[in-house]
Length: 403
Image (cartoon, rainbow, N blue to C red):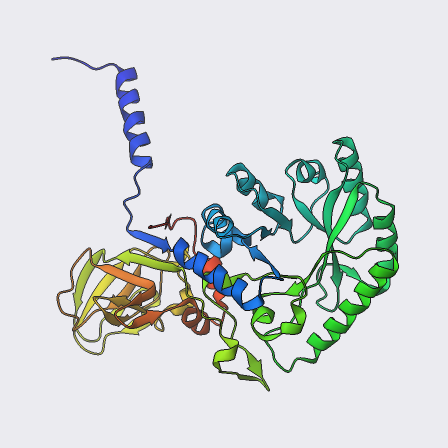
């Protein structure tokens, strides 16, 4: 009998482990339609017209959809500007060959300025030290002029220079020989609230800031304050650039007036969700009446029940607040979630659904045969927003990009 050496056994185990690590067999995934993303971009661009530049926001891994793949699709569709949060989000795009302008919307940290200039990124600035560091970095790299966008805090209270402190920052920008103020921006705090007085106040403050910039000899070509909601509802905020985010992925925040949701086609761009989140039935169980299910026994069967176990849970980003409230689509039927969603598993009642079997595809977010579950529905049940629902789909869920 041949005896294998310890080294041979270790090598075999290592090779097997390497192969297994490359094969994802857990049947929970998200399909992302890049064709739908491109169509949504065209819809937004058509809405604002050719004279307005669309800065497509791909921060937070394109709201959970995959920043590199989405950026490639957007760039191929004509997007010349992409918006990210930070240098860490911009680097993978440049490494993937994305050549579009990339706006760093929340500025940068000390020590990042050299890389920003080297990678041709456009930082948002509002602090004197932003200007000082970028001026030194640009000069040291022999770059004649590096573009920046000035951010003004007009009432949001987060980032940007306050209007009363603007003269000092404008003076520093005027003295910076290696920086070009290419844009000026602000961010609206309540663009989806139709009767919010703060919006008009922010618009007034922004116009004041622009006038102060002109007096200082600074008149940027890109003027932007409109996010997704303002793109839809506040034409006066468009200026020369808009920054749509969640609209590109098929969603929006509900509009409100007098504390109530406002309905109406004029406030709804015809964009479509681009992500479908799916799983498969892992196991099927039969229970008698009065059987408690899941952690804490929060659900008790009222009659004999046929229950499917799904390999998805809050570790995948499936919001725990959907417990005993949400629903899925299986075999073109809605099936309610029963019991608490756990870290890796979710139970749904499939009683009465014909032909149900282990391995059947289940839609967590998406549509089938006239049935639909979207991130807005999840957000309402979880007291959240579609932004959070989408961004929270974890890295454990592979994103696929079917042609």
